[in-house]
Length: 377
Image 1 (cartoon, rainbow, N blue to C red):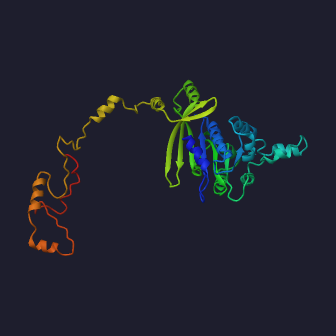
Image 2 (image 1 turned 60 degrees about the horizontal axis):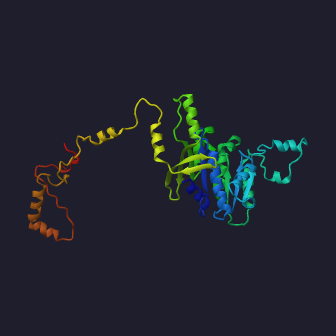
Image 3 (image 1 turned 60 degrees about the vertical axis):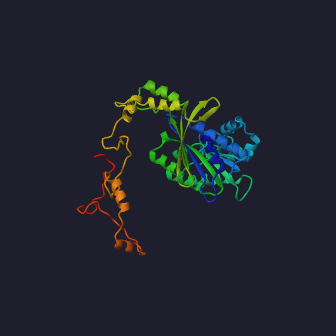
């Protein structure tokens, strides 16, 4: 399933559509969102370098780690440094996000940075309009003009929301998605740091939402030792929930399992054992939410009071025209009894007619309708 997300980001968007946008969510109970982001980032960068992606380049906007960290990460995973220099551009919002270092340098108390380093550093993260312009300038620098596409990755929208308001950040993402040159986007969101309305707003402008969730949720009813035990367990494995919005408007829900290894995060299909573990290790409640095998068998043997049981005979449903007891007899009589001559003459006319035969002359109008005919009363 994680691979299907990577393929979706690789293929990009169709002409006239907004760019594919992925939100990766994590929390304190499952704090491995950074590893998931790095995994998908590497896959997208590898496809771009190999020429398999719709995008010709990748603009990486960093807030939580230095550019050197991501360059080292991608090269250690096997990507060629010379190809990365051509297809990857990093906008550094980490080194000097508020411009304080620049002010110190301008005061003459320190040596000035080289021009090459300062060109990649963004020093005003409070201004989303300037950030939008800088990202677009970086995207224009890739080879090709006109219909060339590029992808955008933001390592932490949560950090952006610390410096700017929700409407301005949502506007930045929406504006980038609406550009024809942007093929796909992805970013990371730490849900513990935001209100529910903020999370809902970011999810609303996303086409894919991937949530990292614990295998066993931690509740307030558990003591401290249990919480530490499950925190350690949840940091090693958990569930990967994906909500994918399709082009036809439908939403596809997928679930997978992830494991943390020395080489990084690994995604596998959800095993039946962990499904059982997740059901059994529920928080302790005063009542039981599960049924045992004997309870399931007893429930299956319960006979509902008004349900047709058959009793070895075919089940007959009242059709509104004749009684069940004399249905066969009435049916044969209706077949043998000829219609009156007057009726035969009328039947030859072009007009269509409805012939209604009552069971008796004493019955009232609409008395043939039995709403409880499907019940044994």
